Length: 444
Image (tube, rainbow, N blue to C red; front, side, top):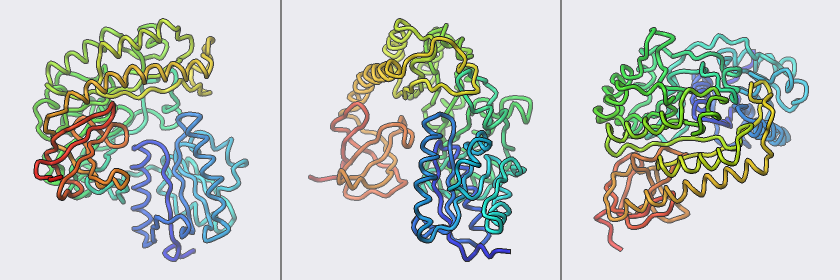
């Protein structure tokens, strides 16, 4: 038996916030074994690279990271452990080719981590992909700033969008038991903002309890004294019902913000994507949310250049943006992924055209966002301080309409500000993404 308590472990986590939660739980398992975790890659003797493989670009990033990390084997590094989505879906292609890696584990194999590592130290390499039992654990080593954290309430997906590999990587949708999620949230300590994530948070509970349970778990999470607020990401539009709208509106601890991936606006394209909405239903949902929840911020994502998308349909998406006036959007060029139904569709769009369409959509949204941001000038906003911006020489944080990493920030001057605390900031200027201001007690 190898004494792993004498080893230092490092971690590089790639991809989404859901992947981050997996990595945090693995780190907790490592620390529970009595091992040391280091943030300095040059000190690490065992380096874990938690990978994403949702898109070709993410697979490329993962492979490049693995290859680049192998250079540290000339120093302290002894083993590279590759975990997550890349081996889960592509182990057959990468095991023999990616010899820089010593251990492979899939998305649900963290319970056999030390067994796999022991095997690699004995025999050089090991592949334990698919051998884990995916037991639920509550313990985590939080890698975000301590005042906010993600809570992954479910995994997998049943939506079967024709462009998406997630069901083939993560499997069918399954919810985590509510009582264990509450226990996990309690164990996070004082959290200014708890961010709920899943491929589709609105579907939570259907598989486990026979009905949607998102509102119930929201009530229980917001009842916890250590949770100051809850933010919802990744709400499937057709699953947003009156009960959820009322809960978001009436529960003071729920941030008035929804991330609703719409993916497109035009009915023909949406049907080819196997999305169940229509342009009209999306506009009606947006209008309903705004009428029922005053001031709600709505974020979305869209795919540009889906196979057979015409110039007219792309232009129509632009007109949809102008009509919907969403608070923030992300636009992505369609990525042709082998193994998805859309891969076989005739009429693939050239990369240059997809890139141009993404650029056009961002230009349209930038003007919309600028107008929205400028509307805050002269107003006072409640801002959660995320820290100090050394580049700008001031504090920075987020108002309710901004989620970490994906939305804009509020840069502000103040005599003093503490990370994780809220401050009233007078907004003085804006750009299309960020706001700038100061607290009332700040003197030039």
